[in-house]
Structure formats: C-alpha cells, structure tokens
Amino acid sequence: MFEYAPAPESRDIVDIRPSHGLFINGEWVEPQGEERHKTVNPATEEVLAEVAWAGEADVDRAVQAAAKAFPVWSAMPGAERAKYLFRIARIIQERARELAVLETLDNGKPIRESRDVDLPLVAAHFFYYAGWADKLAYAGFGENPRPLGVAGQVIPWNFPLLMLAWKIAPALACGNTVVLKPAETTPLTALAFADICRQADLPPGVVNIVTGAGETGAALVNHPGVDKVAFTGSTEVGRLIARSLAGTRKKLTLELGGKAANIVFEDAPLDQAVEGIVNGIFFNQGHVCCAGSRLLVQESVAAELLEALKRRLGTLRLGDPLDKNTDIGAINSAEQLAKIRELSEAGEAEGAERWSPACPIPDRGYWFPPTVFTGVAQSHRIAREEIFGPVLSVLTFRTPAEAVEKANNTPYGLSAGVWTEKGSRMLWMASRLRAGVVWSNTFNRFDPTSPFGGYKESGYGREGGRHGLEAYLAV
Ligand code: NDP
Image (cartoon, rainbow, N blue to C red; front, side, top):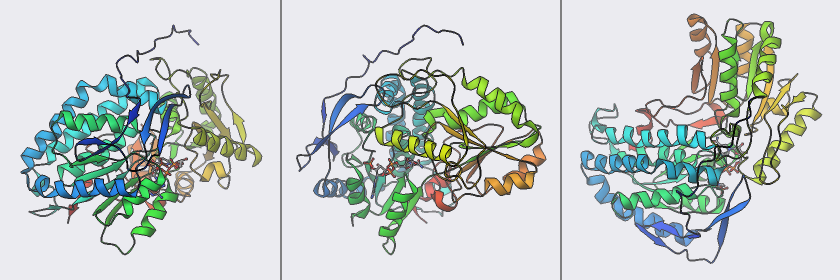
C-alpha cells in the first residue's frame, strides 16, 4: 500500500458552543430539568459539548410551539413555503464544509463521506422538496392534499443530518410543522440546523429540536398533540412505537433495520463487484440500515472474488476521520462497538471463519477493523441479525433460484444488490427479491427523487421522491 502523507481537514471552521439548550419556538431555551449530557468525538473520546436533556414538560412546550405555528405555515401558499426551503438548502450549501466537519467530529465518519455524500444529499433533499411545495396538487394525492399537523420525528446516529433532511424537508414542503429528536450520541448537526432555521428566518415554531435519549423520543411520539410520527432506528424500538400508537389517530412511518443481500453472479464484472461490496458494507463503517451485509456469491467465482476482495480490503485506511485519505472511520459509540464485538464473537463460536486485513487500530476511540466471515450458514446469527458495523458475512449459491431463496430468507427487506451483465437476469431477480430498493451493478446509491423504505420487519412507508410526500399528507 502507498504511504500517504496525512491530509487532515482543519477543524477551525467549526465553533462548537460548550453548552446547548433546546430549540423551541425559534429560540434557544433552557430545559426545565437539570440533566445535561456530554457528546463525545468517538475517534478520540474527547468531549465536544454538553447538551440539554428534554423531559416531558420540554417536549410539551415544543409540541405546543409547533401546533401554534401550524395554522400560519399550512395556510401559506406553497410557493412561499418553497422560498424558505430553497433558502435553507442554499445556506446548507454555503455552510457545507463546516457542517461536514461537525458531522465527522460528532459521528466518527470519514470527512470524505460527510463532505462528498452526506452534505450534498442533505442540500439536494431540501432543494428537491422545495420544488414540490407549490405542486402538491399534481403529486397524485388528490386536488387539494392537506398537511397532517405536527410531525414528531425521531432519528438515529448513523446519518444525523441526512436523516434530519429526509424527515424535515418533505414535512415542511407539505405544510406540517415539526418537533425532531436527534440521537443521543449525535445531536450537534441538528442543533446547527436550528441555527440555519433562524438564519433563514423560518417562522418560529415551524421547526423545533429537542435533544435527549430514548425517554425524550418516547415522550415525543406519545404526545397527544402529535399528528404524525416518523421514526428511523432499530426494529425493536420501531415495534415499541407501533404498539404504543396502535388505535390512535396518529399516522406512522417506520424505517427500521436491514440485512441486505449483495448478490454476485459469475458473469458480473468482478473488479466492479469488489468495489460495490466494499461500498456496500464498509461505507460509513457499516452503520447503514441498507448495508450489503450478506454477500451471496455464485460458487463458481467465489474463490476468485474473495481473493480480490481481501486484496482490496488490505488497501483500506482506517484512522483519523478528519484525514481526507481515511476510508474507515470510528464506530459511533462504545455501546455499538460492544454489539459489533459480541456478534463477531458469536460468528466465530458458531463456526464461521473470521478474517481482517492487517490494520493498526488507534489507541483511543472506538474502532473495529473491516472484517469478513466465510463459511457462514444461513442459521448463524451473523447471517440473520443486523450487526450495524464493518462486518461482511459471505454465503454462496449455485442457481438464480437459490440466490433468491437465500436473499429473501430474512425477516428484513430494505435493500438488495445484484451484479450481473445480463439485463434479463437483473429484472428476473428484481421482481423476486422482497426488498424496497434493488440496486443493479451498484450499491448504496441515494437520490432524493427515489423512494426508500422497507418490507417486512424493515418497516413501512416510503421516504424520498413523490412517494415521500404521502406520509405527510391527509390522503
Ligand atoms: P434506537 O432505535 O434505540 O435509536 C433510534 C432513535 O430512537 C434515537 O434517537 C433514540 O434515542 C430513539 N429512541 C430510543 N428508544 C426510544 C423509544 N422508546 N421511543 C422513541 N424513541 C426512542 O437505535 P440504537 O441507537 O439503540 O441502535 C441499536 C441498533 O439499532 C443498532 O445496533 C442497529 O442495529 C440498529 N439501528 C438501525 C438503524 C437504521 O437506520 N435502520 C439506525 C440506528 C440503529 P437515543 O439515541 O437516545 O437512544
């Protein structure tokens, strides 16, 4: 491997306030309780800031602010709402470098990813839904689609600002107001977004941000003033929310876990497939709900493909996420690292063979090397459970029918990838795979115009595209 000189991005561009309040009704307010929590840089364990912990009374204040803002915001002509969304999108672009550095510091993802993937997509989502705000009558949901009211939105830590954009942009375009809770370990870009709302002169109460843990999320989704709940996170918490909302008038969308199959046929261009496998499972340290965590490779090319894959993994650079050469950043938290370790140990104990490239691990912070398991059986935990880390389980197949059978043998159904040079085989596979997204000769490709969502235990509802509007309209 070539030795590269360090190329660290400067963190001077971000000015992190040591302590943050809650963003309610367009103002920074102090929570009613005393509790505060520290958010750390997972690559160094350095404390970045303290954030407020919203209790039930704070959530109530935020929901009331959103309810008060709703009549004005929803009655505003779509073209006027669009102006705010376009303004937000442009400010995001202007502040993209600062936001990318902040995201990398708080989340641990490589700057190359936050700068080149997350931030461009965040801005693109706001631009895209700004374009819909005055065209809702032509979206296919009736002539006069109405917003729902107050949306309570709870997001995870793997793509903090991007998940915020997926949730807030369509909600506002449709005329809803929002209370959003970011994840406990990654609140900083959501708080920076609150500043952007002020910079854009968004009317007070249209967007409210409450920080906190699971209890804050639970208080939000169960608040009687919330009309629509949108959640992205674990299937376990998704189930809890579905149960608590059953029988209420609240509309619910859930985007939950995945255990996607990335299927490589013998006629696929293998070098490209290797890149797709790497992107599928090692992008964002595998903290991706639609990650290609199960590689299904046709038996006739399995040995050749694995050799090429291992060679490629030997060239990945793990380390300082702010270094522009880094491919693999830090694991987001000590808890997530413990979960990845536990499942990897279970993989070995159940008889799969574990391999990682020689890879120096920094002394401080939370790290896990890229890992490949071969000899994996469908019954193994590493083939069934979402690891949410840089761990690939390799299985083989002989026929297309067997590939479909194995790919669908999961309680999840969020995504899949198929690598083949034959268009007919691609379509044959796509029509049989029970997955919300099927990528063809690529993986982990996102676009605001394209709907995203799951089957089975991966949740329900779609985000993105025209379909994403439906979740925020009374149709
Ligand atoms: P969670 O589902 O617990 O967290 C997602 C969000 O929900 C966070 O903001 C969390 O707050 C909040 N939350 C937690 N409990 C509740 C509740 N009862 N009611 C309302 N909101 C709640 O995921 P974790 O962060 O604990 O990760 C656990 C596992 O979930 C991962 O290992 C991974 O396998 C999977 N996961 C899947 C994601 C996906 O996109 N499909 C995303 C993230 C995780 P807080 O952060 O304070 O816990």
